[in-house]
Amino acid sequence: MATTQPTAEQWKAIEADVMRLFHPVYLDCDGYLVRLMLERVGKLRLGIVVHVDSRLDPAWLGLGEDGPTEIGERFFQERTMSVYRGKQKRLAKRVMGKKESEKKISHRHPWWESTTSMRRHLVANNDAIRLLEDEEVTQRHEALKAQRAAKQVAS
Image 1 (tube, rainbow, N blue to C red):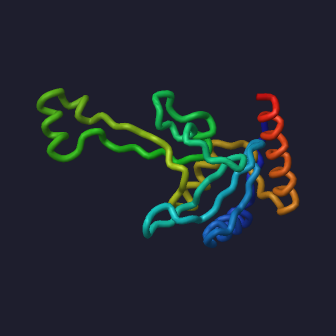
Image 2 (image 1 turned 135 degrees about the horizontal axis):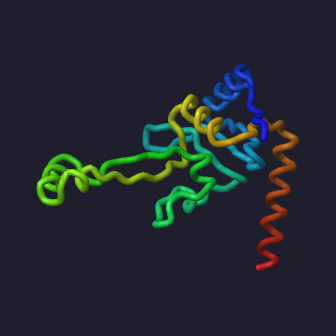
């Protein structure tokens, strides 16, 4: 399958739009409706929050035993951290060995702090990316609502 990506000028425009506070940018990434919006993610911290098909499902982040889903790996940033730190790490190295003391855990974050790393990740994990116009976004939202309503009726 041939890859289709925005041009360098289009990426610059996308990144400039994303950096405006509470200004959503909608992309079509391999059939998924992806919304990128700069929002507050901490007390004094901003991040580019990603919503896929108008949702943000915690199961996508890989916080459980199953790990991240395909959507989580495709759109969210992976974070890793050591299980042991400082004194605990030195003690774990002495008691359990070096291999166990160097153990790390990873999970996904639903936001990005850098437009460059977000762009690199999206390009690497999606074949077709394109910027959506307002009319098409409205149509996709209506289709998603109808799809969810049909699922609720079926349940």
